[in-house]
Amino acid sequence: MSYALWIVQALLALLFLFAGVVKLIMPVEEMTKDIQMPGAFLRFIAVVEILGALGLILPSLLRIRPGLTPLAAAGLVIIMIGATVVSLMIGPVVLALMPFVVGLLAVFVAYGRWKLAPISSSSAPSALREAR
Image (cartoon, rainbow, N blue to C red; front, side, top):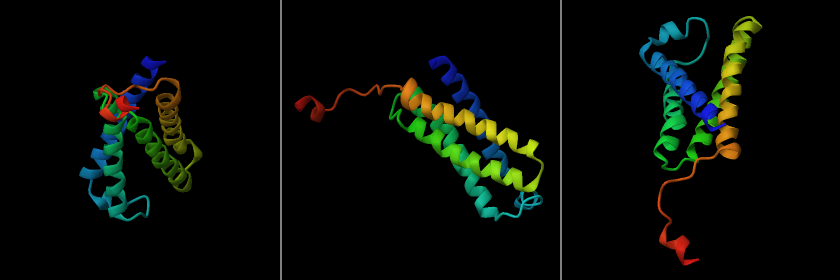
């Protein structure tokens, strides 16, 4: 299960990193051509996607606060719910399948790293824990 989670985490991180960077580079006029959303909101989504991509990998890889990985995945689930709704509003149902499936994969990572195969922290126990 752990291997499957790592593979999905890496693929989602690459996807969200790419999507976020593209949204930061692309002109606002080009992004708002098909959908009527404020440019600042789309830039915010781009930053959230990049931070979410980093949050999917770095805490678990470095074993520093690995509990942030399921939180990053849960945050990306919220982003993908919004993307699915917007896709349904602007086009056929088939267009909404991609963000829906990506959202399901993010749910898998969130639940998997929270309950099925959580990663333990590499930090040594603190003095407060030893005193108990």
